Amino acid sequence: MVEINHIGIIGGGIMGGGIGQTLAQHGYSVSIRDVDEDAIADTKERVKSGKFGLESAVKGGYLTEDEKEAALDRITFTLDIEEAVEDADVIFEAVPEDIHIKGRVFRQLDELTDDVPLFSNTSGFSIAALGNAVEDPSRVGGAHFFSPVPVMSLVEVVKTPQIDEEYVEAVRELAEDVGKTTVVLEDSQTEYGFIVNRIWGAMMDEAKAVVNEGIATQEEVNLAMKEGRNLPVGPLEGPGIGEEW
Image (cartoon, rainbow, N blue to C red; front, side, top):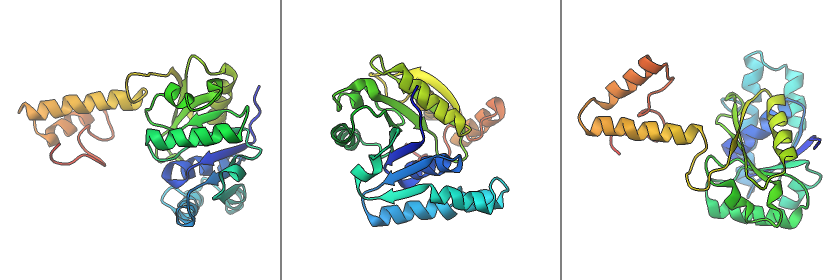
């Protein structure tokens, strides 16, 4: 069985920083690599004092001051990808959601590592497609954390026909060890999105159709779905949804 103590994270920001923070809070050593000092500074600030950062956890009574400081001590930041993956037991890729950027990262990781599991935090790209960027696709999987990572409980663990099941189990256990609920699912090479985003996207399309057909207004659709299905937000509200589409 793969024993995980140290995790390399390629890409900081909201996702990589949130993953690193969550792992560090639960005792894991983390190295986060980003592309420039400004990006690193932003991630450091978000991890320490952001809305869902460690200081907020202390104020909410979820961590003590000593536990906060210990978590910060377990996170290192670097511009050097080789340094970030050194001695890593597993590597999470968390760069922007661009298949070409992710492909380049996986090619770099293939050159720098041999038998370390490589898991992408993509929210929907084919894991098999990313696995094509490495010589041994049996070590490539998906671990889709949801934002904001410190408070959202779900992780979609995505496997391909090629992946070593030992790696799938190791990452599933890691996620559950830091308090997450996991679902393990098969990779799809034809549709973007795994479970949550694919189904939510279909619901958004139907909600838009209801409005466009004049059946109900955007506000009425949102209200009906929240009250009728106990959704926290309607399908046509929240970030990225405007009055027109």
